[in-house]
Each structure stands twice: as structure tokens, then as C-alpha cells.
Image 1 (spheres, rainbow over the protein chains, first blue to last red):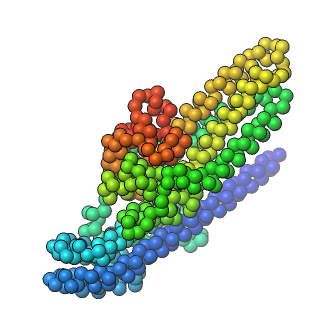
Image 2: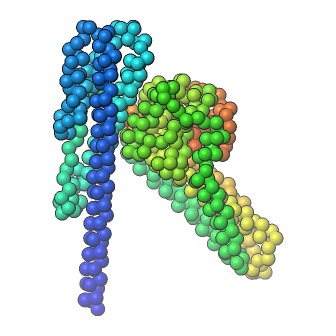
Length: 185
Length: 295
């Protein structure tokens, strides 16, 4: 009788344990895929930005005689958008954001440029990609936060270790850009 | 209350309401079963009808609705801003980009349709596009995106089906009490059962409607809160709702009671006293703005 009860207890503990491992593993896989997917989203937008910049430079070149440095800088930084690791691409993206801000601010001084349909279209597309990058980064970072929490906290950390899940890196924002991101809670 | 707490409290309340529903239906079925020989035929019939209705509304409800409003698909370059906003917020929500439609209509409003995220669409009126700035439009779109992400359309369909089932059953009960032959009609217990059955049959349709409206209001608060989480800027939606509140004109274009639970603001502009509030699909705009601003 007593042995029977002990057997029951042991087997139910084992079953619950296995269930927990399976469920946690599936959650971790889901998070990992979500992170990969949102990284792909960031990637798409960075490439889109990479493609749009030469058009923009071409369009504004004729007007902006005094702002040559910004234009050369943006052309130089552009290639870093699609090459290298997470950190360097994030940094390049931030630099481009700043440079674009300057260009669009300066454009206010050139009424002819402001009237150009092509320029307006590029401006809208580039600000569109910029906010999409921001949203994709938000989703990416949120997912990384959840995954890292699972990997750090007990008991899910044991399962994460068992299957070799690694903590992911955040897509960081520079201090200068942080002020412009709207975070209000 | 923070945004995350707001979201989880809303989810809890929605679950509680669904639970209430099931209690009402089971109670109804129990009394029915006590009173009659073979209640299963009636139950089966009621169930069958509501399943068919639900299937129709799932698979062509959104098409019917878009046609009813005369919605047209948004195109570049005319609606570039709108398209970019929707695409951006879809990325933020981590769902596929929904289809985007525009209705020619001066009253500012918006709605989402589709029973799952990859079949969803978001529709806005031209009046909305005209009066909202970027942050406000983002707020409205984020609210609709949350309806899609939270499976609210499916959720409300489920609720509508439950309403349908309970109304049908109570109607059946009422009719059989009137016309049918029931067991145990000679003794006192039978008599009390008939009285209880009668009261239930009369009250149930009213109660389930009230629950339905309460669920709908809860989901609106939930969409506001999770929308704020998408834009990280609750003030955008708060300002947008303030503008919608200031606009007193009701929608002229095909709006009616049947679809009002899908729109961001009650198309009938029914805002006012408490009794009306109970029968409203939307919480008062003032209360929604207050909650958004305290996030």
C-alpha cells in the first residue's frame, strides 16, 4: 500500500517535470524565432534605407552647395547599414538618422527643393522607414527582454542551459537619439 | 495603473464575463432538462443554427461589412502616410500587415475586421485622416492593431454566438412552457419549476445582452491599453479620442447597431447617462481618455 502511494507520487512528479520541460522548451523556441523574425524586419528596413539614400543624395546635391560634408558622411556611413554585426549596424543606423535630420532641417531653406515632388516622396519614404526601424527595434528588444528573463530566472534557466539557449544582445540606442524616442508611462 | 496591469486586469474581466455566460447557459439548460422529456432536440437545433450563423460571419463578415461601407483599398501616393503608419505598427505588434481601406465619410472613425491576424484589415474614414496629426493617427491605428492582435473580432463573434444560443434556448423554453406538455405538472415542485423557467426565459435575453455590452466595453479598454503599449505614447490616442468626442456628427454611411461594437467610437454618438451606458458597446470617451492619460 505505502509503496503504491510512493510510486504514484514519484511518477506524477516525473510527469509534471517532463511537461514543464516540454512547455518551457517550446516557449524558448517561440521566443528565439520571434527574435529572429523581428531581426529580419529590422534588416529589411535597414536595406530599404540603404537603397533610398543614393536617390536622396542625388536629389538634394544640386541644391545643397554648403552642406557637402553631411552628404559625404551619409554616403560613407550608408554601407555600414548592411554590413557587420548588430552593434555596428545599430550605430550606423543612428548616425544616418542624425544626418537625415540635418538634411531635412536644412531643406527648409531651399523652397525649390521643398517643392520638388521627388524630394517630398523620398522624405516621406525615409521617415516611414525610420519609424518602422524604431517599431521593429521596439519589438526586437521586447522579445530579447523576455527571452533573457527566462534564461536568467529559476527554474527556466535550467532548461535553457540544458538546450544551450544563449542570451541575446539588445539593439541599442545612442543617448542622443534616446531623447527623441517617445517613452511615457 | 500601468499599461501591463491594465492589460491583465482587462483579460481577467473578459474571462470572468465569458464564465458568467456559460453559467447562464448551463442554468438554462438544466431547468430545460428538468422540465421536459427530451430537451436535446431543441438544444441541438439551437446549437446548429448558431454554428451556421457564426461560420457565415467568420468567413464573409468582413467582406459584407466593407461593401456596406463602400470601402476602397488605400493606395500610394494618396495614402502613403496611412500605409506607412499601418506597416510600422504591424511590425511593432509582430503581426502580418493587414489590408488597409478608406471610406469617404466626414465623421472620424475606424474599425478592424478579420478572424485572424493574417486575414485582417483596418479601415479608416477620410474624416479621420483629415483631422488627426501623426501621433493621433498612430494612436488610432495602434488601437485597431490591438483588436487584431488580441483576437477581439473572434472573441466578439464567440460572444455573439453565445448570446444567440442563450436567446434561442430561452425562446424555446418560453414556447414549450406555453404550448408543450411537461412532466410533473401536477405537484408543487413542477409548479415552481415552471415559474423559475418562465422567469429565466424572460430575463436571459436581457441579461446576456448586458453581458455582451460589458464584454465589448472591456475589450475597448484593453485595445486602448495595448495600443498605448505599441506606440509607447498613450497621449496620442487620448488626443485623438478628444477630437472624436468634439465631433458630434453621427456617421451617415451605413453605420448601424449591428456593427457599432467594431468601430473605435460609437457611430451613433450615444454618450450620456448610466442606463444608456449599460446598453452601449463602448465605454464613455471621457473615461477612456482619463485612463489613457493616467498610464
